[in-house]
Picture 1: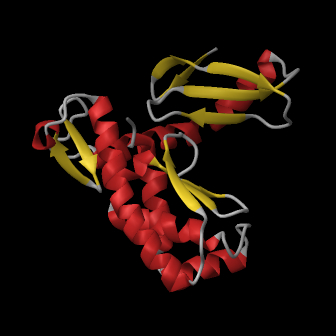
Picture 2: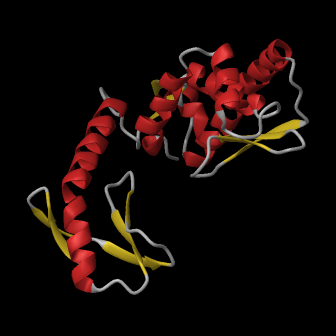
Length: 210
């Protein structure tokens, strides 16, 4: 289905789901997916989407603004990479390809996580069973009920204080499994500006890709 967005005709992918309300998903690449209720007519769908276009255009502008900030300077995905929020050339560490970079990220992130988990588990008086590093799109970290933690490999691209926030967040789940007020108060008692770290991941996490 075609719509005029920011003065240009664009194809929007329509995905029908068992749901009550229409929603729009915007990918980091600017690809737009409409998730619509089953049974909605084309006219109803078009009217609903057109009412959301001004909001969608603002999201596209913000996405492009954040992309420019993240990739400011000489950053180029084919030649450079980000490590703990800073730009480096692949040749700085004799890295040949993405597989080399993945191994490099895992090693560097493990070193940071080992230290942060050691420091904060002691400071917060909270234990954990184990941790692992994985590569997923949807979460930065998880904590199971039996104390197994996981952290996203892409965190290696984030500043260390952002990784520190994710560690505090997941360790806090050892005391509060839900994201209720007591959980956030607990997180805030160890990192007062945790919302700034959350905002960093919301703004730039979409561009932290391998």
